[in-house]
Amino acid sequence: MRHPDAPLVDASGLVRGFGGRRAVDGVDLQVAPGERVAVVGPNGAGKTTLLRIAATLLRREAGTLSLLGWEIPDQAQQARRHLGYLGHDPMVYLDLTAQQNLELFADLYGIDDASECITAALSRVGLLARSHDAVRTFSRGMGQRLGIARLTLHAPRLLLLDEPYTGLDSRGARLLDDLVADVGADRGILMVTHELDRALTGADRVMVMHRGRVAAEFPTAGTDLPEFRKRYAELTA
Amino acid sequence: MNPSARRQYAALLRKDLRLEYRTRETIVAMGLFSLVVTILFEFTVGERIGNTSAIAGGIIWATLTLGAVLGVGRTWVPEREQRVLDAILIAPVPRLVMMMARTTALVLFLLGVQVVVVPLAIVFFVNGTSPASLVLIAGVCILADVCIGIMGALLSSMSVFSRTRELVLPVLLLPSLIPVVIAAGGATDAALSAPRQMAEYRGYCLFLAVYAVIFALVAYATFDYILDD
Image (cartoon, rainbow over all chains, first blue to last red; front, side, top):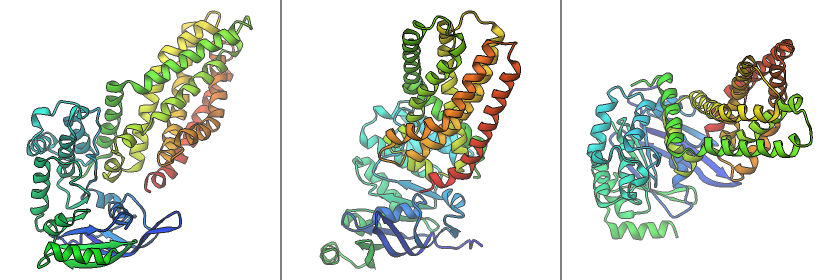
């Protein structure tokens, strides 16, 4: 039975392997409403695998996972309505226009006032004037901004961000900063990043992963960047 | 905000048709390939055998099925190359709706190719035919395309995550379509002999319909597992 005040992410003992190697090895993870959690770690630490499990894109081999109180994978369809996922790429069709891409996702998420939402989303990311141009004609930064419009179109409660600043122009980075800063009381963010400074400034809590396990977890308040870098280097040595 | 399956199906199908309209990659590739194979058959078989009417159905469906492999191989390519697959899979779309939209798009693409290739092949390989035969052949095309569409959607989804997808897809698809090719070829030959072989025509069409239902049940039972993970 789903509890209305359930955590956005509640995972325990997550395990996932590839070819005999455990990419995620017994990870516990909680994200509460209003909370922003950054996952950092070196390449191969299991950050993206963890995020993809939380995004219902990968099945876990062991452990438990619920998203907004929905048990995964049995109730994945219900949970997916409230998830927004942004990776290195904007995840839009290059041969469709910006408008057509957002229309597609508005239909998939069942947005009622789709036309107004799309106009508002395009306006927010500064692409309204290019709404009828194929995405193929966009610069990488513009494409990423369209990705942000797609991400926020259905007002998801849990944002799952995988290196979201990759390829963003300055305007896009500002947009994403604002999105991360204004998380709101009932939404939450789980962000995977290499950038320690962004993790420190954009999250309430940082989780350091190393070789598939959580090496450390601490609040960002009261932690300064040099101290964080030093600790990170020790944890991932 | 409760997305209806009908709206999601229409959106996914419209997306596939829009992409094809803009790029014209699938229909053009399938059409050109099928035309070239038809012409090859004409020069290699038609030149040696005087009356090819008796084997026209087999030639037509061998050609169309090989062409269909190209079209099925293009399925999921934009999602994979443009990295949209995760955004589609994370959306609250039942996997069955995804499969139905993909199947419908494949059937429409196949019909688009057949509108050109089948009449041309009949001109090459059949000595005189009636409008009634063409209508009957259109029925065969629809039934066979549903079989190819369902199996194509299913197997292309299985191979989309494979590194050797270009090899895996034809190896899986062609053997599974052998009964479809045999039945569609037989039904086409019977249609070309109409009204003499109507009982045979109905038998082959029934076989295709049953095969489509079996394919649909297999796809229904497995599609969730294929795309989730």
